[in-house]
Length: 279
Image (cartoon, rainbow, N blue to C red; front, side):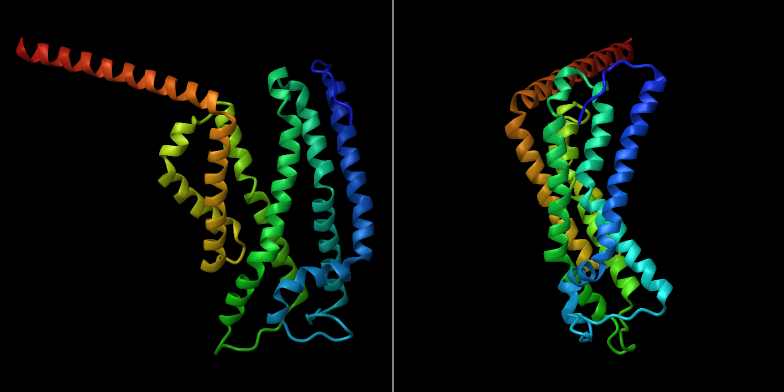
């Protein structure tokens, strides 16, 4: 898709923004109609990982859930179609957003545009797949077991689908962490040495993020996400060190020079204080 020039009048920028928003909305509208018709199949696909913790379905359905009224059925189908459309159209949405801001970047920064686009899409998809294959089953198993001795769990379709969608979206966005770490290093926002040295603080922050992102707030899900984020963080640092080794070397030299200057300044201040004390 075409990229606008770097310098345009204000109304031209607004026109380009409107054009890109129209493309996004049109793409989403078409996808919503398509996915709404396929909602039963999508819902069964979403419920597949937690099928062992649901009652047996009827009418050939893999797993049985209940719907209390027709309005809930419509709202649930619409919610599924909306989120499925957002995930399916995410490459188009992300491309339009990045393409709008691309003219403001310097030529050296523009070379990262296409890798950023594909990396962001791939990481988001990887996060949703990881959640689907690894997280959903143990998370719902633990949650279902909490009802032991309290009563029978009645699987309401709207609440189950809503929880699964929140899981998928949360993990999809959380798995963008390597991209964030990479750009913190490449744009000198936080040097690699500081990120490497402050790993304890980062781990605590990742634990907090895991508790905030997981919708059920269960220890099982939180620990699984925390472990995944730690692996992604360490992997992103390793990739940054390999790809940006020259930049990291310069960053380390700059930090060492600043630390040496601070030590010299501290020594001079200490000498001045000692001299005044003698006088």
